[in-house]
Length: 166
Ligand code: 4NP
Image 1: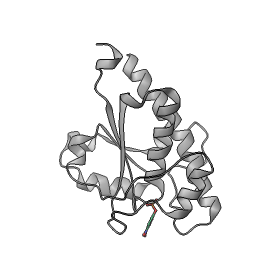
Image 2: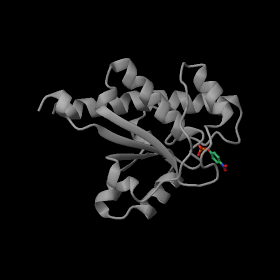
Image 3: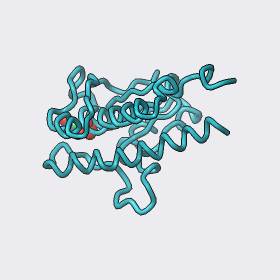
Image 4: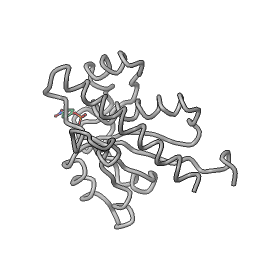
């Protein structure tokens, strides 16, 4: 099968509110795909385990910090759904609490195997083992989220592309 015939890999990024970390992860990964000319190889979305902000655009602070890195975050908040475990190949949670909630929701062992932590993709020597919730933090919290996501998404992309070649 040549590359054009390969089914797109479907990735869902998940955090609590779906207004800060996971829409930023979606935006960072999409930007990387555009840069690499790989948009057709993937479908990317994000969702929250909580349902406090359904329908909203990402938090204004997250959009401002992302914009400074050339990223437009246009996702509208939605909650994770059982059907997501069918639809997506990879479901990536930002922190331990997201992962616990996702594992509770997974309808089967096979579905639970799709769940991974974003920190699995951080470069060796990273100072964090999760993507910290920036909601009650200042500007540094949002910058840290973007730094971690830009590092992790690049490694995730490299890993997925190398699996595709195997
Ligand atoms: P996120 O951040 O999980 O990165 O989207 C949060 C956004 C909203 C809330 C908590 C975390 N909240 O409690 O409303």
